[in-house]
Length: 433
Image (cartoon, rainbow, N blue to C red):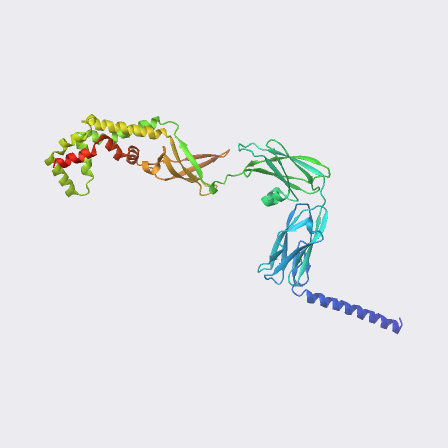
């Protein structure tokens, strides 16, 4: 090789090395914050610190995907988002996002039109990154979804949805709502046309908000018409989110009536053992006095003025002697019978949680009378057993103050006035002094 040729080669080599050095210098300066970071496969990395992933996507019409943004070094930064190419074929959940202190952010993209190509551009104050999007064309496949339901809930109709590229265990309610869907009446299949081909599908099915099912199927072929059967089941009832109006009906009140009649006789036993109805009334008056001196004064006045004799004229003639006791017993028995004819305990049932084994029953009325008036506590603990077909077995006991029950039913001040002329009683005792 001649000296001139050797000089020419060295010159070319030096020029090539210089260009390579300049290129290397330019890249290392522009990538200062990221040259020590590992770049994940499928990720677009812009040298000056903005990353958008994944770098490329192939979607089906209606598919919704999440894209992630990372800035480096990690910091809070504003990132603007754009659709380039065919913006009418998709839409973004946000047009502007802020990364967190770790430099991370995310947004959602939904593809709408078929057979389209476009880009997503993420741009911060000094950096940018892009993701290439390809939306596949629609196929001509058709799916007929047959509901299989053996429950007892009322059907409002069926809605089926198809989520391409997904599985049942990954489908969310919002994702299912964004896919292809169709409706049918109870007992009829749901038909869905123009489905994408060649990709697995999650087929969801529901009736209202209480019955649902899902089935995974393999990809459809072009022009295929496939039938899929989806088993739908009852969803758990959300008891904790609502209070239930509850009325408990007494099937037979004969045994209760007999029980209360016995108790009424026992309650009036002390009255029956008194020397007379008149002495019982005076003893009851004496018991209302609050201190012993007042009671002793009452006893003296009773003996001196002959109140036992004088009180007889205050009773209505037909209730003289032992008629007062008989009338009181008959009145209480009648009041209890009328109360039992209501045959119900009404109130509201509430659950601390959906799966709770106990509940609280707020008792409002018993036999159409306010519970508090007839001696029943307002709150009762209930044991709950869940059974198929939305059946609940409730177990609990009612406790009440029996004397308060009789008092509340008889409305004792009014009852006493029915049997005793109170004005005549007061005047008689006053005149006897």
